[in-house]
Length: 139
Image (cartoon, rainbow, N blue to C red; front, side, top):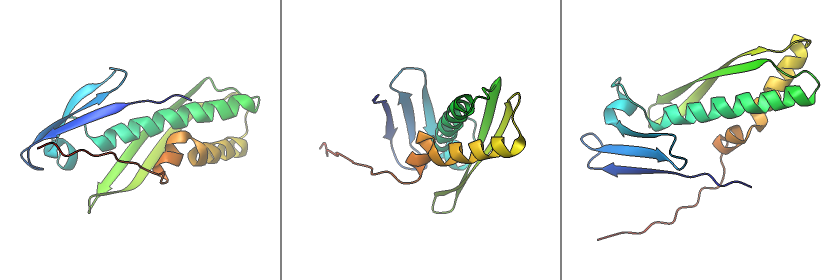
């Protein structure tokens, strides 16, 4: 299966420092800071990228489930709100999905939504996969 990459660098202290996140594909390379993460300063942050990843994964997975059930969607549009609270801890991710699916009853659609929420790869990753760290101290 595929292996995807991303990287980040942070320079300085938590509040005065700054960082940069880069996707391995080159599709995104951008700065982030204390202000973009914990305050209302314009810019991106790790939580926003998690939201985008989950919204994209969920939409694709739901589309696949609907298609497999014989009710292919015309479109699936999902937005995510990632709530970062004290700790700091991500304590809630709200997905809002609007789908155009000809010929499906709402009960069947909601069952597919529940399946996608539980089983899309990013949902599973956010449920607690093993995380391995290989760290080198450079002096």
